[in-house]
Amino acid sequence: MHSDVVASRSAEHRDSRESRNGGGPTLDAVSLAIIEQLQEDGRRPYAAIGKAVGLSEAAVRQRVQKLLDQGVMQIVAVTDPLTVGFRRQAMVGVNVEGDVESVADALAAMSECEYVVMTAGSFDLMVEIVCEDDDHLLDVINKRIRAVPGVRSTESFVYLKLKKQTYMWGTR
Amino acid sequence: MHSDVVASRSAEHRDSRESRNGGGPTLDAVSLAIIEQLQEDGRRPYAAIGKAVGLSEAAVRQRVQKLLDQGVMQIVAVTDPLTVGFRRQAMVGVNVEGDVESVADALAAMSECEYVVMTAGSFDLMVEIVCEDDDHLLDVINKRIRAVPGVRSTESFVYLKLKKQTYMWGTR
DNA sequence: ACTGAGGGCTGCGGATTTCGCAGAAGTGGG
DNA sequence: CCCACTTCTGCGAAATCCGCAGCCCTCAGT
Image (tube, rainbow over all chains, first blue to last red; front, top):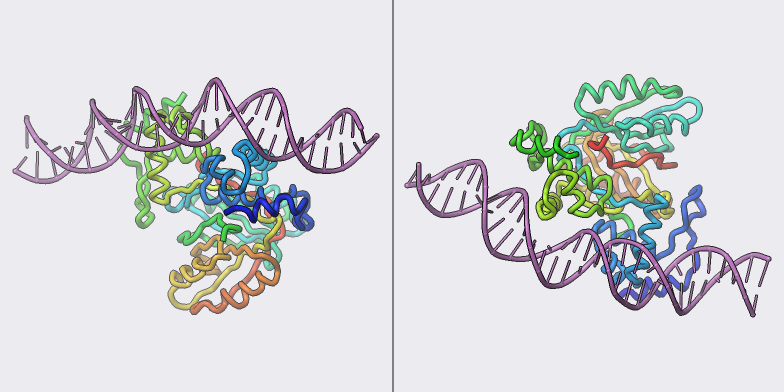
């Protein structure tokens, strides 16, 4: 049933990942399998996960705790704020002059920013923001974000409808 | 400790939400409080949640189950794919001629699309895609997405570094 | 006003899961 | 070879999850 995962565990000490990113902890095939289990159901019991990946309940528990401590993953409830019904959302593309990373940090410090990513392309930064209402949204975009030193320009995309939201990569 | 939440539960039968979105179930203050608890820790025991929101363990369990069944929220493990180390990601802005929603559905059906949202602004759709490697990314953007009927043009923003990723709205 | 249906909450056992710890097994450095 | 370190296993105790029966409240219908 799960012999493939078990076999790969002892066969490979380290896989080829981790080489490109700067500082991420190494993940073996078993931890990946555990993460996939928890992507399907964040409350799945450790014993069930252990059966699926070929480990004891206690071992799964240790690895999950370490993954959480290291910040590799987090187990949380996610919702569509628009469905929940009380927020205005937008994606904002940002162009920066000077140090992009410091601007990204400044934006990430804002509580309204839920998602900040550095990109290649006609924007240097993409930022997802969540607001109370239209006034709040306007304030955040035109006052707060544009006020950050180094922000040259912004372009906003107000959310009309969220069509898909998954966290199942690696499971397909 | 939690008297504010308890008081508000009996004080208001329904709050003013749900009016703007098309079909989302109504959420009262207690369900919101439960969701906030699970946004902090998706594995928090029902009894602890009940103590925080002023409900019995069984009642919390019923509500959580209903929220999951209704699709209002999901409890999952989330990671930064770049930290995990084995994917290429990009945000793609899409312009559409004709029916935007049908194009959105077509893109949402693709397994590489993790996030699809209809927007107002210079893009009709924003799509986040997750790929194996650069070749896969190129293939998805230039062949698969552009091949969808109604797609007029696309613009890509390859992810360089994810700076922030939270699910804590409503908790601040 | 009475009644019956429906939804939601509580309390309570029994089954299951989580938790902490001690011991075993594998690994690398001195 | 031995020691320090890490990781896995097994197991009992404590906590949690789960299903169920009963109660309360609301709301239509008569």
